[in-house]
Picture (cartoon, rainbow, N blue to C red):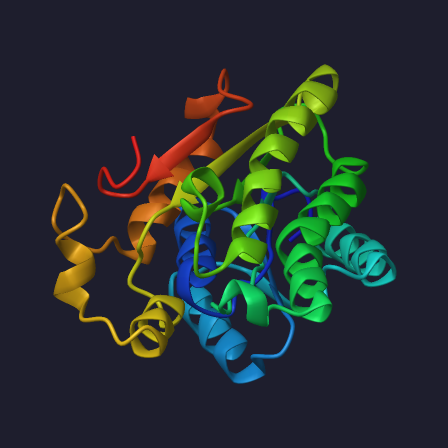
Length: 247
């Protein structure tokens, strides 16, 4: 198994993370599937990867905890012999009224949505070789501001800037760093937003120039491209997957 192409995908138990894991698995990567709580969902991802003939390794752990990440990256490297791709996808979103946000809400959002990417990027890049790549999953909320989730928007906006900074910092090592910024995507998170905000799907679609919600696979395809040699001269960029909702 060693000396194969290895991708480490955080938050890969479901939704966009699962789609990314499967897209990379289909393109020849062995996948380290990280998850924190959703064990049953992670096993479904593992099964899907096995069905396409992809080697996979389940990695349970909180990627905002540096000690956990250090051990995780060592285990992945020992398992696969390489870490060629990192996808920082782990994230949380809970919409709240601004004046109802607590310090804990704010700190948790920054920790999971931003600090985890910093820690994983720092620790994983130590083990990466020239030609490796990192993709951060940010959000349209980090570009236009989210009135229902300012803590999430702040973290995702900072993640965009961190992407640009780390692209410059890691370029001498031949490591590319980019971001993918989804708009409204058909996931459990999106369904939760509709429910909590008492919105209908067609109300959201009417605000999008392409008049539809995106799919996890459409995000995953962009990540797969950025992780491939076809994107060998692309770094420090933000690819928008939002149907024209933000241009």
